[in-house]
Length: 105
Picture 1 (cartoon, rainbow, N blue to C red):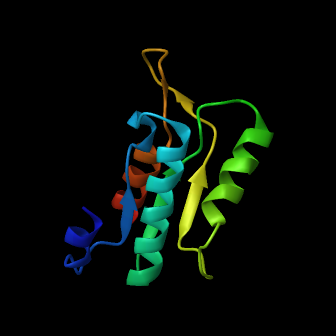
Picture 2: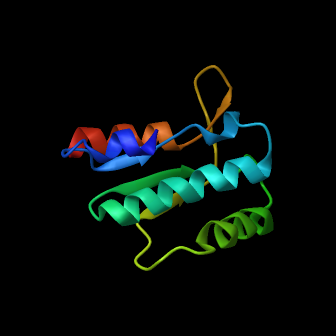
């Protein structure tokens, strides 16, 4: 899928709902792939969700795992915490952040 995005010249950010993946390792691998894609393209920012937890140590571990084998500069952000919407559902922050970027981009 990320190869398809490479041909889009006006794309400036990439996000994915990785939390729908079956396990933590698959989530980390998907997010690492997005970070790598953004670094290779050079002009894109990965907008990533932190895991849905209140434990900051888990979030720090996620961040550290994401950085394994990544080259500087890191073209990505990891957003935390998850948000409570008007229906009292806990939702990932990346969609909201992408919407803010879209409004100002």
